[in-house]
Length: 125
Image (cartoon, rainbow, N blue to C red):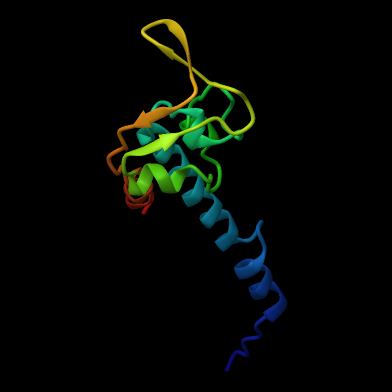
Protein backbone atom coordinates (compact mmCIF):
# COMPACT_ATOMS: atom_id res chain seq x y z
CA UNK A 1 0.00 0.00 0.00
CA UNK A 2 1.39 3.42 -1.00
CA UNK A 3 1.71 6.21 1.50
CA UNK A 4 0.57 9.67 0.49
CA UNK A 5 2.30 12.64 2.04
CA UNK A 6 0.90 16.11 1.68
CA UNK A 7 3.25 19.08 1.72
CA UNK A 8 0.97 21.49 3.61
CA UNK A 9 3.43 24.35 3.05
CA UNK A 10 3.11 23.88 -0.71
CA UNK A 11 -0.69 23.68 -0.44
CA UNK A 12 -0.70 26.87 1.63
CA UNK A 13 1.48 28.68 -0.95
CA UNK A 14 -0.75 27.44 -3.78
CA UNK A 15 -3.87 28.74 -2.04
CA UNK A 16 -2.61 31.95 -0.40
CA UNK A 17 0.31 33.27 -2.42
CA UNK A 18 -0.36 35.93 -5.10
CA UNK A 19 1.85 33.86 -7.40
CA UNK A 20 0.12 30.58 -6.48
CA UNK A 21 -2.52 28.91 -8.59
CA UNK A 22 -5.45 30.58 -6.81
CA UNK A 23 -3.78 34.01 -6.71
CA UNK A 24 -3.02 33.89 -10.43
CA UNK A 25 -6.60 32.86 -11.21
CA UNK A 26 -8.02 35.69 -9.06
CA UNK A 27 -5.69 38.21 -10.75
CA UNK A 28 -6.78 36.95 -14.19
CA UNK A 29 -10.46 37.28 -13.24
CA UNK A 30 -9.93 40.73 -11.72
CA UNK A 31 -8.10 41.87 -14.87
CA UNK A 32 -10.97 40.61 -17.03
CA UNK A 33 -13.52 42.35 -14.81
CA UNK A 34 -11.54 45.62 -14.91
CA UNK A 35 -11.22 45.41 -18.72
CA UNK A 36 -14.95 44.81 -19.06
CA UNK A 37 -15.72 47.67 -16.65
CA UNK A 38 -13.45 49.99 -18.65
CA UNK A 39 -15.36 49.11 -21.84
CA UNK A 40 -18.76 49.72 -20.23
CA UNK A 41 -17.94 52.76 -18.06
CA UNK A 42 -19.34 56.14 -19.07
CA UNK A 43 -16.87 58.12 -21.18
CA UNK A 44 -16.42 61.10 -18.93
CA UNK A 45 -17.77 62.81 -15.86
CA UNK A 46 -17.69 66.38 -14.59
CA UNK A 47 -14.76 66.96 -12.27
CA UNK A 48 -17.11 68.30 -9.59
CA UNK A 49 -18.52 64.79 -9.15
CA UNK A 50 -15.39 62.87 -10.01
CA UNK A 51 -13.03 64.85 -7.81
CA UNK A 52 -9.38 65.67 -8.30
CA UNK A 53 -8.28 62.09 -8.93
CA UNK A 54 -9.85 62.20 -12.39
CA UNK A 55 -8.68 65.71 -13.18
CA UNK A 56 -9.67 69.32 -12.76
CA UNK A 57 -11.31 69.45 -16.18
CA UNK A 58 -13.07 66.08 -15.94
CA UNK A 59 -11.81 63.03 -17.75
CA UNK A 60 -12.28 59.42 -18.57
CA UNK A 61 -13.71 57.40 -15.71
CA UNK A 62 -12.77 54.27 -17.62
CA UNK A 63 -9.08 55.25 -17.46
CA UNK A 64 -9.20 55.15 -13.66
CA UNK A 65 -10.61 51.64 -13.31
CA UNK A 66 -7.97 49.55 -11.64
CA UNK A 67 -9.51 49.53 -8.18
CA UNK A 68 -12.51 51.20 -6.61
CA UNK A 69 -12.63 54.91 -7.34
CA UNK A 70 -14.60 57.33 -5.11
CA UNK A 71 -16.69 58.55 -8.05
CA UNK A 72 -17.80 55.01 -8.92
CA UNK A 73 -20.56 55.05 -6.30
CA UNK A 74 -22.15 58.08 -8.00
CA UNK A 75 -22.06 56.41 -11.41
CA UNK A 76 -23.38 53.06 -10.18
CA UNK A 77 -26.13 54.49 -7.94
CA UNK A 78 -26.87 57.64 -9.92
CA UNK A 79 -27.41 61.06 -8.36
CA UNK A 80 -30.42 63.23 -7.60
CA UNK A 81 -30.56 66.80 -8.92
CA UNK A 82 -28.11 68.91 -6.92
CA UNK A 83 -26.27 72.22 -6.83
CA UNK A 84 -22.55 72.29 -7.63
CA UNK A 85 -20.39 75.10 -6.24
CA UNK A 86 -16.65 75.63 -6.58
CA UNK A 87 -14.59 74.41 -3.62
CA UNK A 88 -11.10 75.76 -4.21
CA UNK A 89 -11.71 78.38 -6.94
CA UNK A 90 -14.00 81.35 -7.51
CA UNK A 91 -15.82 79.70 -10.41
CA UNK A 92 -16.44 76.35 -12.06
CA UNK A 93 -14.91 75.85 -15.50
CA UNK A 94 -16.21 73.42 -18.13
CA UNK A 95 -16.78 73.11 -21.87
CA UNK A 96 -20.16 73.39 -23.55
CA UNK A 97 -20.39 72.97 -27.30
CA UNK A 98 -16.69 73.68 -27.77
CA UNK A 99 -16.77 76.85 -25.64
CA UNK A 100 -15.18 77.27 -22.23
CA UNK A 101 -17.81 78.38 -19.72
CA UNK A 102 -17.38 79.71 -16.18
CA UNK A 103 -20.11 79.65 -13.53
CA UNK A 104 -20.33 80.30 -9.79
CA UNK A 105 -23.18 77.78 -9.37
CA UNK A 106 -24.53 74.95 -11.53
CA UNK A 107 -27.87 73.20 -11.08
CA UNK A 108 -26.95 69.62 -12.01
CA UNK A 109 -29.94 67.58 -13.25
CA UNK A 110 -28.67 64.35 -11.67
CA UNK A 111 -27.61 61.15 -13.39
CA UNK A 112 -29.26 57.81 -14.08
CA UNK A 113 -27.68 54.75 -12.41
CA UNK A 114 -25.21 52.78 -14.54
CA UNK A 115 -24.26 49.52 -12.83
CA UNK A 116 -21.36 48.75 -15.19
CA UNK A 117 -19.37 47.04 -12.40
CA UNK A 118 -21.93 44.29 -11.82
CA UNK A 119 -22.11 43.72 -15.57
CA UNK A 120 -18.30 43.52 -15.72
CA UNK A 121 -18.16 41.03 -12.85
CA UNK A 122 -20.81 38.85 -14.48
CA UNK A 123 -18.79 38.92 -17.72
CA UNK A 124 -15.62 37.94 -15.86
CA UNK A 125 -17.27 34.93 -14.25
